[in-house]
Length: 208
Image (cartoon, rainbow, N blue to C red; front, side, top):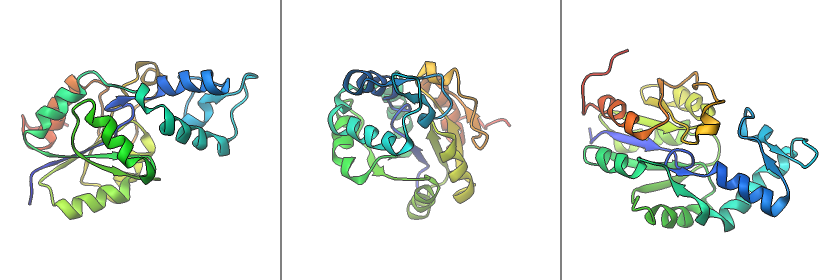
């Protein structure tokens, strides 16, 4: 077996995105983004307060990634957390964007001195997490993501992986319940690091 492994999402875990996306769709498309709405698709609204059709949502997200990634800023404590965890574990950033954005995401993260393997993915993250575990054979694995659907996917495909639900945007976190398929919900990295290290076998034995 190899060193333990942290698999972490990027947006709203390492980098803030939603607030910047909300600003951009208001400026460029005269749309609003309701940070209190349940689910990304329900949050994007027209001037009349109607939900934007689903088929228009993902092209808008891609449009943000094409021209607006420079707006994103690092989540407080994320760089320090990765540095500490990286002393004892391998780190892979599994980001739910298309492969065409991989180079831009790597460059974006490097601006914040985050330099780890980046994998892009569309759809549930369970299959790529299971593939990483099979490839790297870590002694233990922790998965961190802001979306409950990915925790459910990982629980189904890689049930032995520890799952931490984290939402770094406070306004979104306040209206989002803990993911049912996650082992824990922690929204701040300084509080999450001891939990992660314990599950990776690098701290006091976890309770519960």
